[in-house]
Amino acid sequence: MRPEDLDPDLRRWRRHLHQHPEFGFEEVETARFVEARLREAGLTEIETGVGGTGLVATLRAGSSERAIALRADMDCLRIHETTNLSHASTRPGLMHACGHDGHTTMLLGAAAVLAREGGFDGVVHFVFQPAEEWGQGMKAMIRDGLGSRIKLDEIYGLHNMPGLPVGRFETRSGAYMGAEDGFVIEVQGTGGHASRPHECRDAIVAACAIVGQLQTIVARSLDPADLAVVSVTGIEGDNIKNAIASTARIEGDCRHFNAAVSARIEDAMRRIAEGVTAAHGCTAELRYERVFVPLINDAEATGHAVAAARAVFGDENVDDKAAQMGASEDFAQALALAPGAFVMIGNGDSAPLHNPGYDFNDDALVPGVAWFVELVRQRLAVPST
Image (cartoon, rainbow, N blue to C red; front, side, top):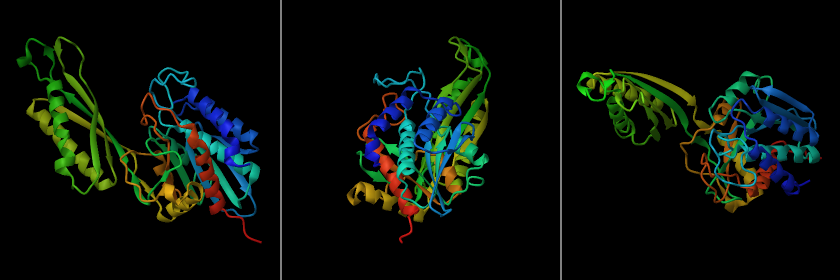
């Protein structure tokens, strides 16, 4: 069986998953669907409930105990789909707006091909991860034994990339994707009647002043050589039309590539929040949470990923020096378990990720399956006789 022989099944599986999205740690039906397809393909060594709703299927061939892990994410986003496609989400407010339905399908396809055709000597773990979008799923799987009880020597994952043509492949060694820190600033003022501002300490005005000053952190508190982003993504007050707000809440997101930059961002943010609110007669409390760590590809493992890609996509379609990106990825946690690499494959001219009009490009399914299969066969090569 070749990956392309599975194309009709892959498209059907992917569209089923797209129609039935589930949020992080709620992927119960998704996990059941994955398990059923794995068993149909002949895999019997399947552990469910790893990290809550995750599962790990294991396939063995030959005599080697060397183990390679391949990972796909299963969760969706809380976004209402607007594609109006025949296979659009049937669940209002939930959709696969990041292509995890495609990633899961590609890994299912690779498991089916390798189970039926073999061509490798060793152990393959197919890791279906929950809750990638909010950075908790891989940690949960590690707590449940991935990398310790479920032993592995290398680990690889992929993601689709809108704008990159189908049949193209990108990655880089070293720091590839950014860390993500989340923050909330709670501003406390003194509310009152909207007609008597002189008797109040307006938390909204103070919060707006903070938002403006937060934009100076990257420009004035960090080395220009350090890549970083500070974004305010939400602000709200008491939301009473005729009352001056006594409280305000600012929340947002920071991206960077190393811990020292993260520490400088937090220090600057705390200084700004406390200083600006003091000037307005208010107070502020900052909560700063480090959610995603930077994704740093192992140099040797990246070379292996690229070698498999060249065999599948052709030299002219492989870029092994792709630009760093600020987006974060929970797969980064897995790279502490064993050498590994994370890669991008083209999704063609689609809507952006996390957009209500996004849909995974089914033409990318077979190339993704082929890359997974080729990677396994290269890394767990059958000894020549």
